[in-house]
Amino acid sequence: MFSSMRANRADDKVAKRKPPPPMQFGADQPLWAAWLYYEEGLKQDEIAERLGISRASVFNLLQKARDEGIVTITIDPTRLERADLSVELKEKGGLLECYVLPAGGSAAALYDRIGRLGARILEQKIENDDVIGVAWGRTVMSLSKALSPANKPGVTVAQVTGSSIATYDFSPELCTSNIAARLNARCVNLHAPGVVSNPSMKTLLMQEPIIEQHFTLLRQCTKTLFGVTHLSGPTLLEDSGVMTEELLLQYQKKGAVGFASGYFFDPDGTIIRTGFDDRHIVMPIEDFINVPRRICIGGGAEKITAIQGMLKAALANVLITDQDTARSLCRIL
Image 1 (cartoon, rainbow, N blue to C red):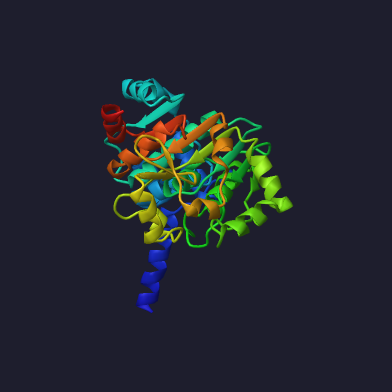
Image 2 (image 1 turned 90 degrees about the vertical axis):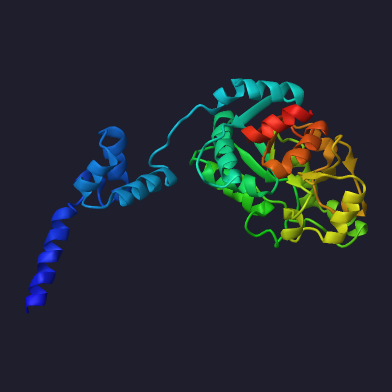
């Protein structure tokens, strides 16, 4: 009996500590917390006291409000383009635009931090009738997750390389569909495998009407978005199952140091080819180079040589990278 009374008193205290949200907020705690924080100017500990929850819970509610698009925080990332390091790398790399992530940020993985910067830049740059070609990659996937919800029904997001089941967590089709979903845009996936068994199969597949239509669409791209992969040490190409160690070794023996949007290249920007290219379903390089804005997103010490080669190959004319990578590139370009 006494334990039941104590339990009832505890429940009463919880009820007193957790007042229901005002009627205009319904049961939407993230909206209520966001209103108190951003509109009423309350501190997080003040909100915690008012809602009868911990400060950590307030932080989580505010994060949920941002994730769900209840709150959008607008920072102008294009100002980073005017920083001295960005200007120097833009000139040395032959770029139209360059954005450099400052050092000293959060403890999050570098590809996530660069991805978030890329999301903010893409949000600023996207136009209502864009056709955006998207290649796969871990940083591209991070960008797709960091995009704020938008309503861009006139935008088309199209896959530029064939599909691969092995790259399930950052696959071409997933990167494409994620970006399209965040933008409420049209999504066009490439209904073909990334690699086929022999060159004849590729020739036949490329003649299929649905595949022909897709590559006709890719020739209308106004922007492409892609990452860059290094070939020294462990590489995502092998880890994801796209290529075998033997195939990678063939490219490395020819001097290849990096891979971007379906193509291998050496430090001087020469495109490296092997028999693998005759089986690889990817946007033809002549069409790719004709896209007005080719956005490469990536960084890290292990990718410096790969980015160097990618810039010399002119695969990208817009680069989003981090400060340390940018400094190293400025020294070697």
